[in-house]
Length: 219
Image (tube, rainbow, N blue to C red):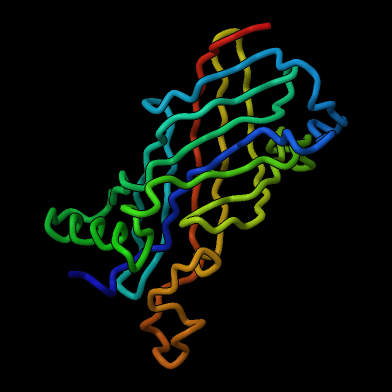
């Protein structure tokens, strides 16, 4: 197996769950009452939604994708207030290795216990804690939440764009990084093997997300 050929990859999946235990959350610069009625519900379309990953190991850069399993998004008017998005870690794919044997070998290793252990942890999730208008002119939304990978949750904030139409919602999250060691993915990390010098695998994971949802209810 290509044990030294790892890219920093995520899963992402992520999980936007309702903050039912919170009394309020900030969205688009306003304070929302989470006890208010949900006006719109959207079901994530797995066929139109993906997480892209890219990374580098001592052997060079690599990239690929992970498929979404589904989920829901909930709005008060045009404001995202909660939801759930699930990413199926069992679908990790590499896109840049041309040799099929090497490509499958890498994918298998990423799914193994050294990395994402997908048999035990098939899904990655993200819980939303707040949403607000982004201060960046390129994006119209900032989402703060808790990302769960391999049963471990870490706080995370991401910028993005949301477009909501009568029947669809589109979410685009540009490239961002997380530290894989925070999710107990320690294989050849420089943090635990500083003596291997250039042989270590980068601890950072780079992701971007494209998501499409279909309206399932209107109150």
